[in-house]
Image 1: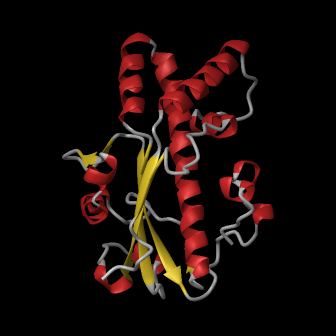
Image 2: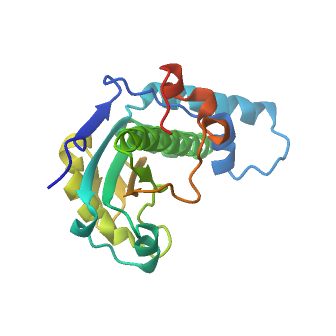
Image 3: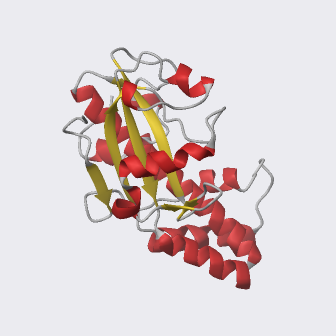
Length: 228
């Protein structure tokens, strides 16, 4: 039996923040180590950001489950969820348009594909951060505290659990996310994650807006709200 606040599915038209590709995050995914950027690369990054933000159709869903209802393999996830009263499963995606653009660039502009791939990775991670913040806000209204999100492929949690997470989230119908035989998601710029809901604050989770990486662009702060 799931909780009443768990059936959240958001799309760009449902008060969701449009896709954002932060330059610093894009550079990080490009392996930038402080070297000087040429004017050409700086321009290409800006173009990729604009293109990704225009093409992406961000959407996400999450559900809450009793902690005992989901058995996940691996010591790391077991330790991560220790003491959790409930578990949130979440999925987020930028949509199929981003994949189509990546395929087009692979045939016409290999460098552009690399830069666009980094920009879209930055965008889906920022989207996941926004969804995690909304979940944390809902949890705090219920006097619960979130652990940070833990995704298949982290630690010893295998990618093979992706299928069960997507089924439990009804992600194919809700978001259009499917799984390849090798457990990779389509659209490729998609994220699944597991968050524990605990009765006490969790170590390693930021405790105030002042130390949050989302502070400059947080849609909740713009509405006079906080996830803390």
